Length: 92
Image: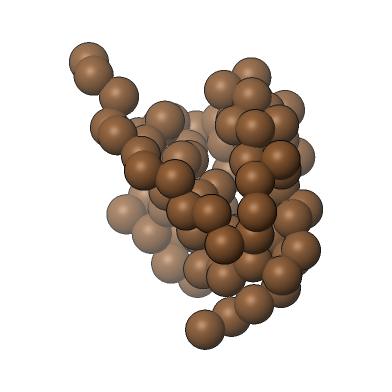
């Protein structure tokens, strides 16, 4: 288990996972990664396809400036560090 600060929402003492800033399926296997808390990591993949992440959301700054991600960050920062909300795939 990797406990520390989420690079996206900046919450402290959260369980973190490795997020490939450019998805592996889009050539990012050996590119930069970020350590994200589980809720942030799940939410990013619920909101956006790998193609969209690769095309326009491949840095922490771009993710933090995205409106949908920004709304999620505002909400998750108010939650206890152990909170892992349920996520649902967006309907198309």
